Length: 162
Image (cartoon, rainbow, N blue to C red):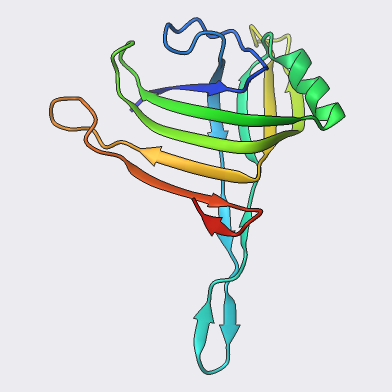
């Protein structure tokens, strides 16, 4: 299943022309990960340790966001919030079924690159570090509309769920 993916990263603007995500960054791919190291005990079993969260990384075509992403990475300036929205492909009324919200964000890596032998526009890999993340997933009902929301999240500074 194909999906559309947009990143809102105010004040940094992208080139999306989508009517519901105008001036956001069109995301081609993304990754995010968490690792629970756990704590082993000899006779009482194991328990949870402190989670290790990877940076949120995404790839997009180099666009008007590039200069400010680079500048922000160099200065370490924080961004209040980043919102990644995934939408099932199918036009403006398609279901936005997965939304990640990152808070206290810093651009930790910007890596543009390309090849003149085939790329029409260079691609850029960007990584964002964050202090808090939440995710909302909306299952799709038989009618095509959303069917409730499942929420999860974690504050990495406070070590608590949100």
